[in-house]
Length: 79
Image (cartoon, rainbow, N blue to C red; front, side, top):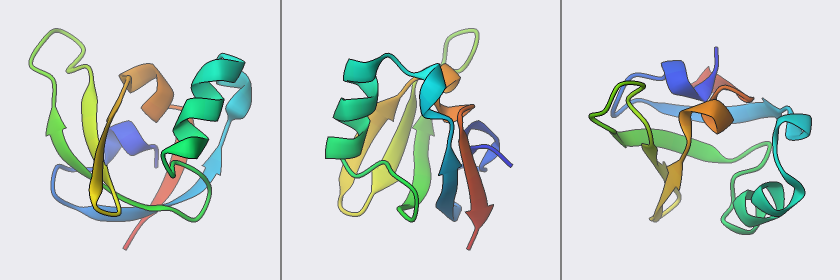
């Protein structure tokens, strides 16, 4: 399952990220914000436009905005 498929309010652990889908600066930013393998996440909100982009993802006590295209690159396992 990928992060974009996680139901709102449910928790999960990131098990793999396909970093090749990211621009190097985007990958660096997401790692600095704690979005890496082993991180526990939850989808707090989804955008209202066409692709429901972006996703507001809780990482610890922070909320991080993630593009749906990036969420597709993150494999998760629900908790």
